[in-house]
Image (cartoon, rainbow, N blue to C red; front, side, top):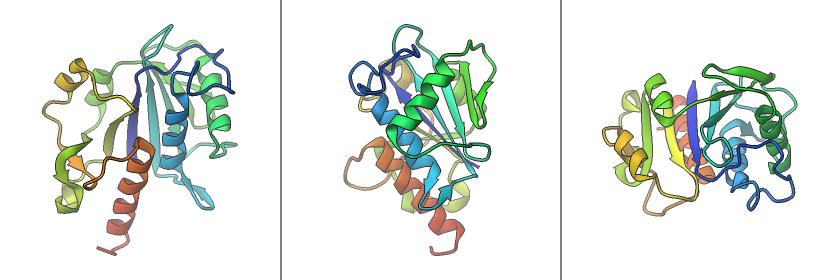
Length: 194
C-alpha cells in the first residue's frame, strides 16, 4: 500500500466553501483535489493499493484530515469539483481523533502532522533530497509527505527533520505532479522495468 499525505496550509475546514472558488474561498482546495486525483486515478480505474490523506490546516477548525482510500472508493471522478464535493461531505460530519466514515473509501478525523508521522514510515519530497532513483527499492518507504504551494512551516520542519528526504529531479514540480512521478517510479520498479 502506498500512502500520501498532502498538507493544505490554508485549506478551508468548513463544509460551506463554494465549489466555484476552490483556489480562493476554498483556501487552495484545488491543489489538494489535484493531488487526490493524481494519487488515485489511472486511465481506466483507481489505484486500489493507494491512499491519499489531505491535512486541512485552514480556518475555522485547523487540523482536519480526510482520507481517500482507493481500495474502497466508489463514485469518485478525477475532476476537482467532484473531489471537492467529497471533501465537503467529509467536513460536514463531526470528527474526533479516530477515522469516521463519510462514504465508501472516504474517512475523516481530527489530527496533527505529529499524529500522521507516528503512524507510518514517511519520506519527504524535497528538491534538496537524495535522487529517488539512487535509492534502493527496499529502502523506499510506503508513505510520502508533501506540502501544497507553501513550504513546510518551521514547526513542520522540526517534525520532519530526521525523516528521509528524496528529490524527483532537477526541476521543482507541483505536488500533484510529484505524486505522479513517485507512482511512476514505484510502478516501474514493481513491474521489473528497472
